[in-house]
Length: 118
Image 1 (cartoon, one colour):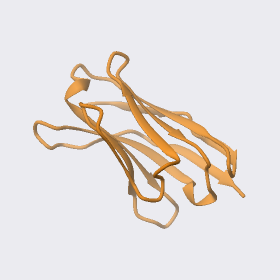
Image 2 (image 1 turned 180 degrees about the horizontal axis):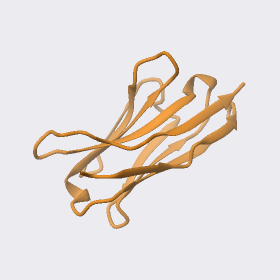
Image 3 (image 1 turned 120 degrees about the horizontal axis):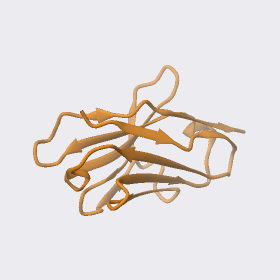
Image 4 (image 1 turned 180 degrees about the vertical axis):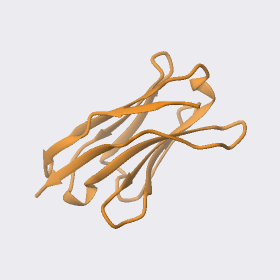
């Protein structure tokens, strides 16, 4: 089991910024690919951003240029810096981890709510 604890969600006006944090409670953080997903009401959960153990990153087209994912291996933390937020960015944001050596299982956090008002 790899507990993941998200924080940093909240209510923000469109155009504003938020920073989400995910704490990894485990011993081998540097083996894990870390991802952020989000889910809006009535919609499927979608991948937002990925950071590998080597700090390579990938983003959904909808957030490129606005969101930045990063990791701090020493602190076992992963962050999602969200700028120029839009109402369509609203949803529950989840942190996900999986060991790149095995490809799974997936571990999920409990989620944190992000609401962007227009």
